Image (cartoon, rainbow, N blue to C red; front, side, top):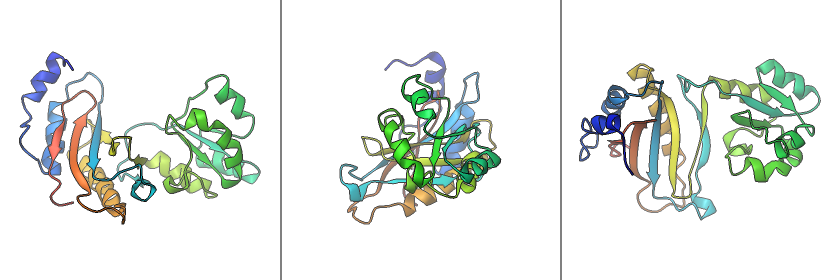
Length: 229
């Protein structure tokens, strides 16, 4: 993969053989971010899990103390008094059956997170083929299938992120923007790592966290020491 001039310049500042402590890695990622927009700071965690086994799957959510720096649009599937509750909580869109053709046929996907009350999962299930591949399907483990619509919407708006294994058993998540103060990024990173460490599957034998890499949207990866985790 060919990289641009800015990337190659930034890469010179990173010692590929060094495993940095998290605060040092974050400081370096901020320093070498050179894009003209406010880049996202991402964490990529390679695990020793085998996601093909259900008991080694990892999926959950954590509220980052300082948010993600991104405005998140929330769609809530609800009925009855839960509709007004979702609207009052600040959901961007609230609806039911009438949204199915809009999403299925018109390709409407102007939202980042989908929340549903359990009694609406029969309706939402019909959107599995559209929402599933995009990682938008509500899930009880992530707190997005719930009767407590207010808490779900508030948490998401406050900076709740979902984490899960991809097909290569890697977790990819944002922990803020390069414009954030270093200490805010460190707090977010620590909150994420606490959640990931607690999510270790009991069925897993051997090393859990193989590698941790921090990067900005356009920048090179900076390796983080896994020793303390």
